[in-house]
Length: 437
Image (cartoon, rainbow, N blue to C red; front, side, top):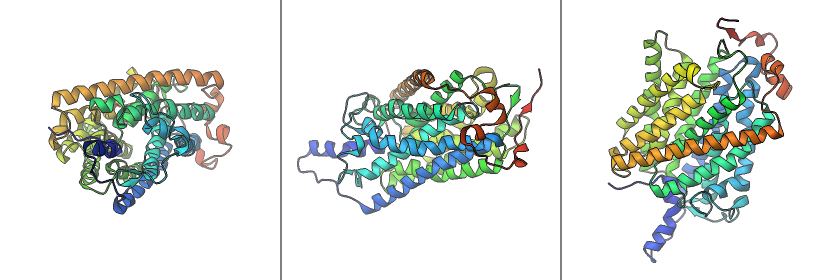
């Protein structure tokens, strides 16, 4: 089989590979159509983080909606600056198998350069959006109990010391997982698995919310959840199809698969809800489509549309049943980040190995599956252990958890001196006691 490399990777490596193969090879030229598509894709991915803020905000209590949303919003500023300072260079700078050097710190040396057929500045901006939302995803596990300052410090360290090296492993031509042939077209391993397991570790280190699991916090604003899910799906088209780094057939396949996989996943989630003795819910529909987006992300340009539908169905099923057993088996991951991003990301990465043959991509199936398995285990171990160490280091500087009084009364006033709603409206979203003392 012919192996199709993840688009950001073969475009990064393409210039040097072509020049070494033939001294007379033509130098890449800027393509205005590709550049226009990548500018639009970067903007679409940027929109995903505010979309995530709406999605997470609607799922929390009314008294903590601003704090929940601010954890996503602050990621835009924090990671946006850190990516320019050092994150991009650590991820895509020349280096060894583990991380890039600092030759592009401050985005030095990118002026006038091309990555494939687009300006390297555009590529760096597009990748910045990935780094931003990866950090924001983690916040869903620790909402309503983690100090805002502690989260900001952890998020900055995580972005530089975990996300950027992992991106180098998978997406840089020097990275060891890239050289091993791991397939991750748009971030299943780099973003969703790493954020999912980091969220789980953070929830474990912080401990459960007060009264968990007998006291549950119901979503205070389901329309916000639906709005956020819609914005995520819209932005995800740039997330996946934009990773082709051009307006081409690869982008077209990724775009189509980003439509059908979450559509199938939404139906699967609603079906499981109905079969499991309940009714199809709006939150379930929103969650299912997000899970489908996660599952198809690593495979979106490596599998056929029918395989994308299968990926969405299996990803949603795995995540749904993980949510059902989480109270017995997992820490208090408040908004199910691990179940929805970690589990679906793992399923998607492994199915990439099993289904890449549908487009003639990758190695023979058994070999590609084992390569994918290695990449999954590596991401889980690196992000999980690294997050635990970083959280312990942060706890030496600032307490990780708010006071019990702040947790009970809500996070917004204590953390930000403002509220999302009037006092009358704040009667919504009160905690519900499920029984017991």
